[in-house]
Length: 167
Image 1: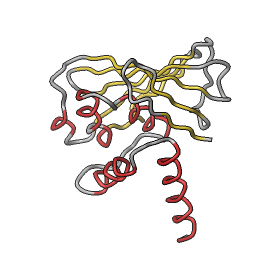
Image 2: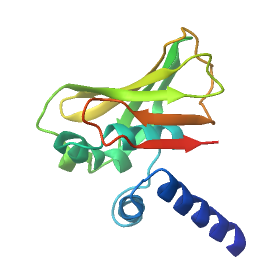
Image 3: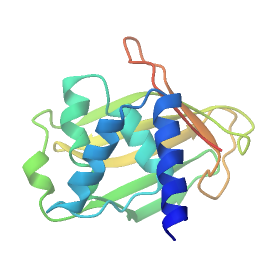
Image 4: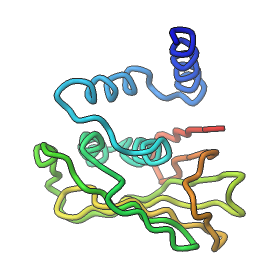
C-alpha cells in the first residue's frame, strides 16, 4: 500500500514537472479539500479542464476556488457531438460567488485517441457560479463515455500555455 502511494506521488510530481504545473498549486488545492472544504466530486478529466480554463487571469483564479464545491453528478448529458456536465453545489460555495454574474470561458483544446478530431471545452456560469461544462467535438462525433486518455492545451490569446497529458 505504501509503495503504491509513493508511486502515485512520484507520477503526480513527474506530471507537474513535465507539464510545468506548479506543484505548490496542486498541493494547495488538495490541502484545501482536506480542511473544512468539502471533497471534490469531479472526475480527473473535469478537474483538469477546470484547472486549465480557470488559470491566468483574475476572474479565473477567483472562480477556481469554487471547484471543491462542485458536484458533477448533477447532470451528465452525452449529445453525440459532445457532453454537458451540469453542476450542483455543496454548502459554502456562495462564499466564492463571482461578482461577474453570467459568464462563458473558453480557449482549451482537447485531443485524444478516443476522438476522431479535436474538441474544445467551455465553462458556463450563471449568477457568479460555475453552472456547467460543455465539451464540443470539432469532428462532429463524441463517445458516450468520459475520455480516459487525453491532452488538454490552453489556446486563448495571452494564456500561460499550460498543457496536461493523461495516458
